[in-house]
Length: 351
Image (cartoon, rainbow, N blue to C red; front, side, top):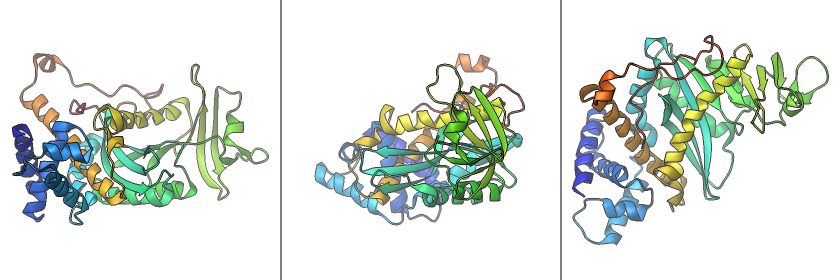
């Protein structure tokens, strides 16, 4: 447990720096939980409690300590993560780069659904905001708005943003929200979305994609509300289903493949669900407690990113000394893509 205590001391120092008004007891307890999370990589509250360097040998007291922390109303995930998210968003927007955001949902069995918006950092992603709901369900636009709205205040002024989202999410409400704020978007659609291309009768996105390799439309209307957007369809060899992507940009093969920016969130969810923290092992039954547990995981990820960045800059390995600053691999076939040459970061830390 000595390593947990050392980690907790570092985390506490960072928390006090960005949250000088947060109660010292909350800071110290949160830091201990983050240190234990980094050490144990487990959301199982029994296992996590066993790693806590507390002055008691009783397991029931350790578990009670952790339960109280997860129930603490002062531990607001958005409030705690905000300064860390602001700093990473500022780095992502520097030098005129486009900020690449991904929106995705994961289900923890039938007990809980977790919606998260994450920031691409190098070839990976780190969480910015999230919302949990009890039961397995599509959280819809109401949940999406909850996780997206805080980012408006956290983003640097004038930052360019590209949001990618999977087929669960696009709705008239989400399109309207993005268009009103001037965000670029690549939203993958299901095959049953009502579509009016202006070239005949109303149809569906699936019918438009049937039997074609590539197809592009401008100014189509989606849903019963008639949301106006551009549409790109691409079905590559070896893929069972086509990409049907709604976008604000001119529809081309390259802009369809911009949706690949969303794939950076997949390793993060792998870390959260199975390859790293095994969130599915959590037995929490209340959404607000799960959100605080995800906060502990998110802070652990941020500390990994910061540690990797600092070590790479201050104590590089011989290979790192020789390495040149690399770019994120091209997404799409054209350098005109707004994400094609987003500069990568060696800071992304594999958890």
